[in-house]
Length: 144
Image 1 (cartoon, rainbow, N blue to C red):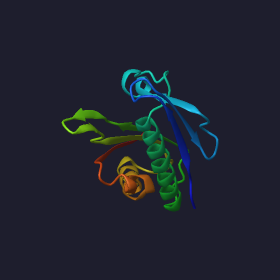
Image 2 (image 1 turned 180 degrees about the vertical axis):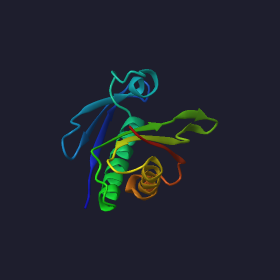
Image 3 (image 1 turned 45 degrees about the vertical axis):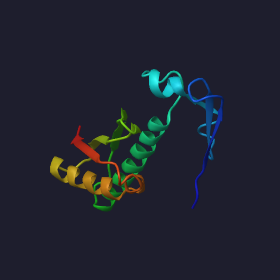
Image 4 (image 1 turned 120 degrees about the vertical axis):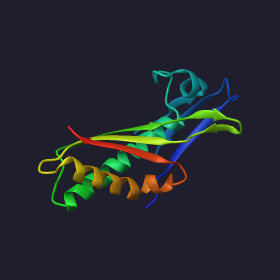
């Protein structure tokens, strides 16, 4: 199985503009650039690599958790995950020091401790978490 995305960039790093397109077409010439990455906290200037990384991680983790819960006989009614990708500028350049996953689940017949255990296992085994193994990933799991 292979998945692909493309990025196109025109101009300097500061003033240039880029577009991202995914194989599925979900993103098609979606804008990204300096303002979207470093200045526009509201996200209205376009996307950025960290936002996309967070989306990929949230989606992968949530699907892994759904499979895990279903396999254990507790199919979820709903799982909502936010992936907070932290970024700061260090001495050697920009760093992504941590990713924090926050998941809230609606899972009939499951207590909070069991839900947290399943969430921790899904975090450890989802393919995106594994790809990001060099980055500390924290988790807050709750039923709601």
